[in-house]
Image (cartoon, rainbow, N blue to C red):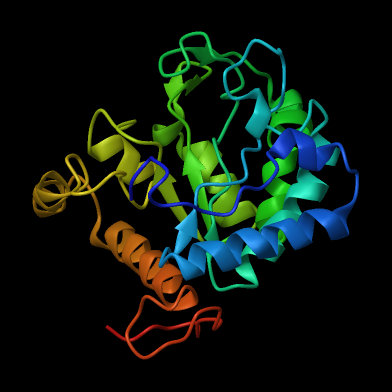
Length: 247
């Protein structure tokens, strides 16, 4: 809670150093250490790994990206996620998707064709989400002109095509409206309390702009995450949720 020497935590290698090992066992062990440290400190999730692809050494976040190669990034990061979550702490891969530049990180639009998107930029996310990550973070930037937090086709790949049952959260203050992100499949606005997916979402549902079952799906995914991390009363960390979670 404090960013000074009064409160310390275990110092671990960044993503670029972990990728340089080419060793899934080492990476998983580091993930276990991180998960254990997060649990010790009382946290239920960590915003990692960063699956964006390293394009330039001038990027301020190069150290936390894994590599320029989507297969290496995805395979090693999948081991990292398994390690973190073995401790009952949720991993949150980020930033979905093509948030690979530092220049105008929050505003730029990446122009990417379908084949390149799937074979390069989405491949690490596919490998990591299919490995069982419990969360994913939607990026600030636009993809082909549309904000990633409002990309219904993008989020449908995760939830429908890949059959992924986790929670989609926004990057901090990435939302600019209510209806489009909600309809696209964005489940939780960060940070809280919600500005666009709070009272405004309730009003949009009442006005018939957002169907109730879209909200129900978001709530179910949030409850599933809470149960997996032990944040739901009466459940321990790491316990797999049943298909239907009672209200």
